Length: 178
Image (cartoon, helix red, strand yellow):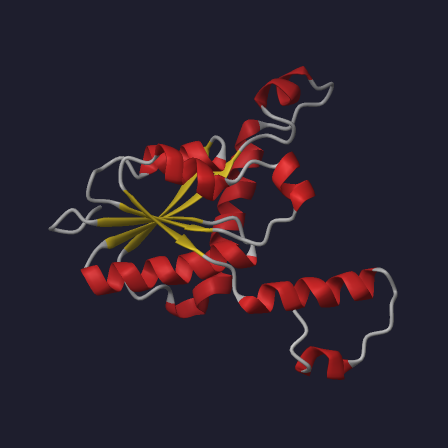
């Protein structure tokens, strides 16, 4: 189901704050350009397909696909609530790595692929490849990389303090602390 002009805005979601910001930006772009919004959640079995098949008790693929569908619906609900994005959209659950799934979905030259950049430290960058970098390097269409919200680093700071059981003074949050 695509619009008459065939324009599409493809957005990857994972449920993270960065992906939700990208989803909002994608909906704005779809509205501005009269395009259809494709919301993509990529999934793989935990540890990968081979690890799942070799497991003593492999998780059924149908169950994993249903869970991915639930995560997609939860991300849409978190981002837009009951009102939805306000543009024609489709939700797609795609088996594969996020970068590859997004690049393969945004396969038309006039597509716009929207991805969240997210906050990434050195350790995270070493352990997990960047979906945004993969998309920028491999996409055959335009890519819009949405930077993280300044609130994301503030929330991470608060979360670290709480998880380490360190005292948190609410005044620190208003003093411009990142």
